[in-house]
Amino acid sequence: MTKRLIPRLGLSKMSALAFAQFVSYIITALTGNSAFSTPSPTLAALTAKLDEFRQAITDANARVAGAIQLRNQLRIELVILLNQLANYCVVAAASDAAVF
Image (cartoon, rainbow, N blue to C red; front, top):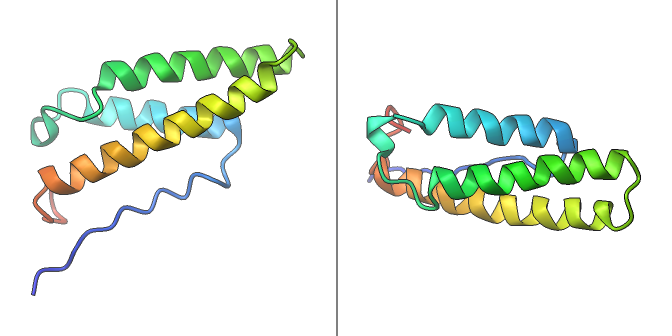
């Protein structure tokens, strides 16, 4: 029986800045990685959403009206993208923990 890989991201306890750093790390780790050559969602889509999220963090810190709500919404969208990406990685790794 093959063990099924289940990614656990633990994102809910991260601050906004730590979360942005984590997403950036994931993007860097997957860029050019031949084991995960066609990620879904694309790294470009993830990077674009991360850029929006970082701007929302800056705006929220500057107390721009509506920025906190936008930051929170963008975080939810990034979590959805990361979950999709994690599922892609599990499939691409064919449940091989050494690749994953």
